[in-house]
Length: 384
Image (tube, rainbow, N blue to C red; front, side):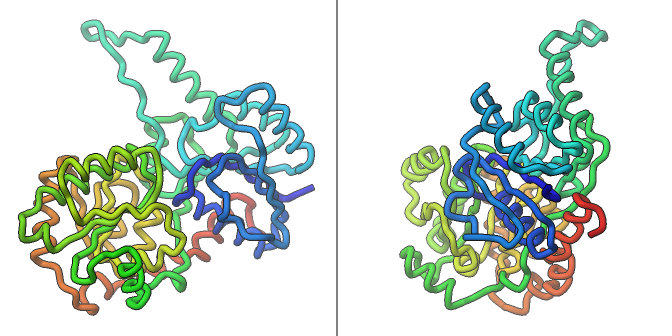
């Protein structure tokens, strides 16, 4: 009988997956006997060889659009790994079938959900005059949301914004916030590694390097960064470069956009395993997403001394406000981003003692991974 079973479906490796690995490490060190059951390709080549107390198994079945064969495979896995508690790590709300949640409830007394993304907004309600017109589509959507909320005994979000959005757009009520953290001792600015990263990828050392980090999905809106850089003045355009780190279905569209705009200093660097070197090579991280809960790239880049220019998503306003290391852009228009970047470049200073680093001690205190994971494990298991 295990203390805990964790389940995750992932087809890419990003902040949710890195957070999950941190959780597994902390569970193992805390003496919590656990099993991590995952499906999809997201964790391939990223999981450590072994843990002392955490059992790992890849399940050849899905939790979304699951069929009878998938349920049969999961039933066998649940019989092998018995536990009172199960944690479903969901990169986004509704990323599992409702029938899979009901099926889990048959095997586990307590179902806990960790939400890493914001829930989809409720569909608009059309009106006839002043009277709301509730069609079948609206009632079905509300019924699904209601059923989703009734199965978990506890919901954990990774930011206050995610909690507020969940309270507004779902029927979740028992929500605990356990904010993300990072290993603050492992993330720091390494100038030598940054120079090696630039040399390896043929990025001129004199250029001001902006970076976009994350899976290349439409919701990340990296095209805004590309368009904004294309709108800079000729003088500033010649002084900057943009590296795009990540893989995903939007890569071809982004490459085509770069070619159409005839931009020379945009580098598509794919998946990078040594992100400390990447952040050390950058001066500025750009977060252009439509939706984020609590991006780990924000914390990692900040710890490595990067400035951050971000859309108003997740906990970006909070972190940037504490660190005084960037700016929040409320608009989605590339012209507004270009103007903000031009102002930023005009006032940029490479002084290592500038305001973007002087609050690093406070940052380490607030976002230390050990502190974050202790709170998360306590929320899941209770005092241990």
